[in-house]
Image (cartoon, rainbow, N blue to C red; front, side, top):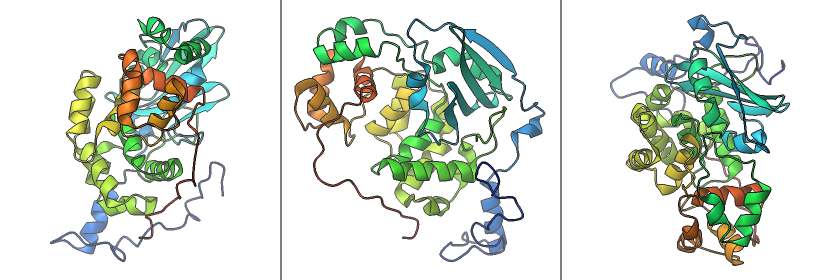
Length: 360
């Protein structure tokens, strides 16, 4: 096995049935043939590398220097943009943050690196300039904390956390679909199950990202996800309900990307069958940096809020919203501070089991 965990092409095991067969349990499209089926599958697994557009892999296409405020914490701020340290699309390495995204201008990688009190943003690939232009938002430097200090002062726990984590900001990527992908996979499963599905999907559909950091993959192309039959996701541990939700969201990804603000994005997201308030909040908090987005319906957050703000070991959504109401406008920020501080309610009973739908 070569470095990076990829086998050479000559030794790489086959994944799935031969191209001439749809495989056991995989239906041939109505009115079609096995060959037509194989052609459809190849259509939804793009393999054209980004280098085909003629961009030099290791040269930035744009660079910008940012001036973060005193005490700013890059790693803590961009933590929300990574799905574990092994995220195939984003990572923090040696104090430098890398993220690969499909922008309206094309595929791109953004590198954020501290340098003598500044923050240098390097963009790679056709969309590198687009990402560099938004680098301050992605770094959380457009995060508006107006009025939060006064609200935080009203509760001793929140006031203490706001002071302890004053360098923490809320990033805004400006790109919607990658966060939809992750949020849908996180619906009603454990974190490990969600990450496995996310990573496997990215590797199945993904392409190498521009830039010198490898392996780093681009998120899947929404059109490819929308065109894929639901059973493509089955080996990744994703049942039909989540697969269909993701495919529906991918089909309207262009419209979601054009939303002007978090409120419009929330309306359009919740109009997609299978996406409710929890998923919408998870998306707009990261894509738009919405400081008021609260994940109603979360398994843990209501208990965490009730425990931290009222000393109650358990709470439901109604109680959570009641306790967060004094912080309206920054309710999501309060939840972020609680998470950053590692606060959680007492845990009772066994952990949720790790399940797999791959063989069902």
